Image (tube, rainbow, N blue to C red; front, side, top):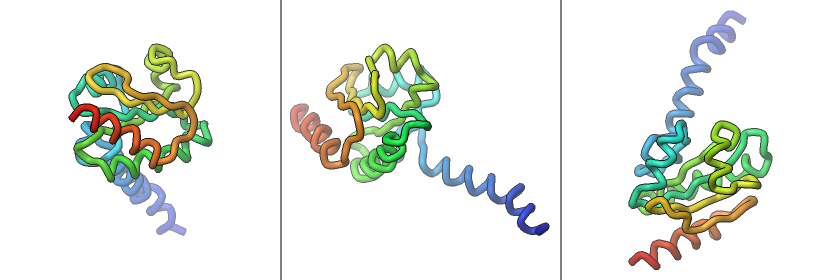
Length: 140
């Protein structure tokens, strides 16, 4: 019993921290999903030259929980081509309102501050990849 308590108190938080830090990055260039932590970070990312796919979600939303792993896969398959980010609509209601996010999950593709593409509802990876590829081809 003592070893279980030690595990829960000492090792479990360390393991959770390692998993969380491996799933999120600050720049998204290495194939990790960027978890938006501030309005400034969001605006800086969408103004960049690299296209950014933003998953607007909420923790309580069941379809959003299904969408999460799909966008994570996309991030690992397209590093350097697109940045994939997640924005919690409950933490950033002003951003959600500004970009008319009325349903979740909503996926929006931005580049240089412009909204390029938007879909509301659960999206499958082939459709997301096709939208990104179409945008990249139109820019070349």
